[in-house]
View 1 (tube, rainbow, N blue to C red):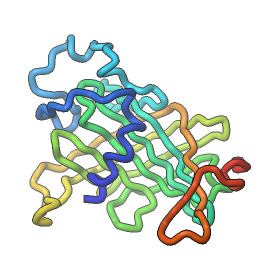
View 2 (cartoon, rainbow, N blue to C red):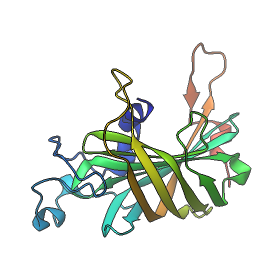
View 3 (cartoon, rainbow, N blue to C red):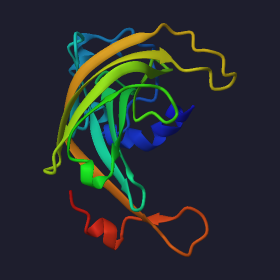
Length: 215
């Protein structure tokens, strides 16, 4: 459920434009849709163009996903969140999401290696949405290097199982999958500061903290 709620926020990072809304069934490990032809993979129309801020190459699949990465910083929150979202070239409804928590702005740059899990307080998690089925990592590792020139590179390997049914909480029935790959590209900064003296949770990017933020 948490993963599905993230999709509306994170898909704009991965897509240069909205793709076809008709979702075809897909191979859980490759994202290839049934009935796709080689010509489909070569389509270069604006509708199917991938953002190229980040490219992720799946090992053993000869498949390159495109998308984006954001570093989410909130004033007064020690945790900095890195989210890498990439979509399959033949089906933009299918995606891989990697999320990593970093211990403070002062420690964000450099190399980070963490274990992938599915616990609520997980430092790192890998998730996928493939063939209308959502998956979450149960084990694996992620290694990421962030640079203050706005670039990143990394590798992940993950063992994922399908998520419980959001309506009944019944265990997922899709077979578990394994995936690994390399990714590299550019990250973008999302910074916000709380707005004082307002009821509720309000924040603004136009703050002295965000304007002066440096890594």
